[in-house]
Image 1 (cartoon, helix red, strand yellow):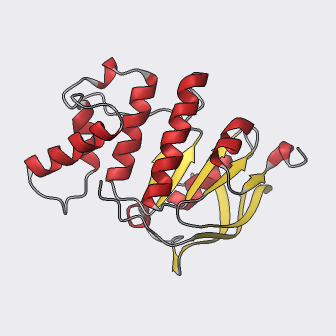
Image 2 (cartoon, one colour):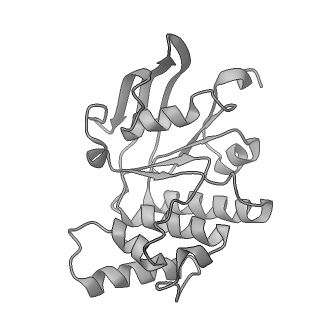
Length: 221
């Protein structure tokens, strides 16, 4: 799979997020390509808001400041599409009006031309995660674990430069959660993507390895 991610370190420098004058978090960290930074905290602590700031879709009621750099490039101020952040949410958010393969083809950059070439890429991506032959399937027929794998491959084929994980394991049962963790972290490592995971689950943090930052009420845990 073509993922020119083999990217540069992602650096957060004094990233501060507040709402109504109340500071939610202040984070500084460097995430090397292929590594995972876990930000752990309870609901309402600002974890997802941190990802929104990095990805470029922060809601206007929040105020935020601080540098986010990929290598020497400052991302803050760039429109979201130029930041090239791949994002996985709690829900796979597959398009119901597209087939499984259509969901993946949708994310392939326009620089890859030709219907057959784009389909081959999508079919290869499905094969990689044990979903060979699923191209024409309706997303509604997939299990939760299958949906998660399709969402992951869709993100990777979009050629991201960094990966943001917003509790993507939280709705999976225990066995699927472990399998999906291993798959996502392995794919990020192979693609060389600096990755930030936000979670309230300590097991997610342990599976990710790497740096761990606590925010909110769990800062002393």
